[in-house]
Image (cartoon, rainbow, N blue to C red; front, side, top):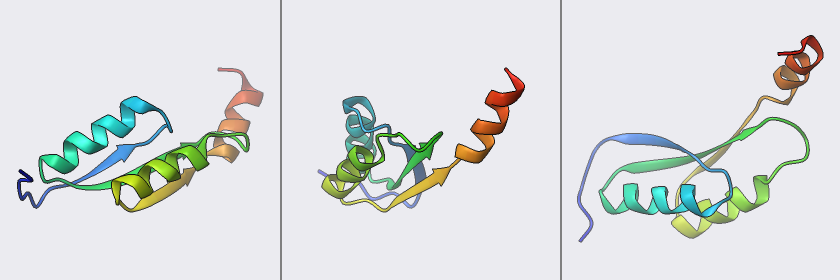
Length: 77
């Protein structure tokens, strides 16, 4: 049974099973879930994360950090 809950959460979706299952659990607990994909560079698993969000029926956003990541990489961690 799906509980009702007014809390909204952002879920980091990697495109893998763990984040998909976490999303399913949150939805079943009644949370309003939005899937977020952190894009560190142009070669990513963004499509897989989007597919998971669609299957879960949740909104999906991409937070593109590729410029910041590239700048950090040049400076060496």
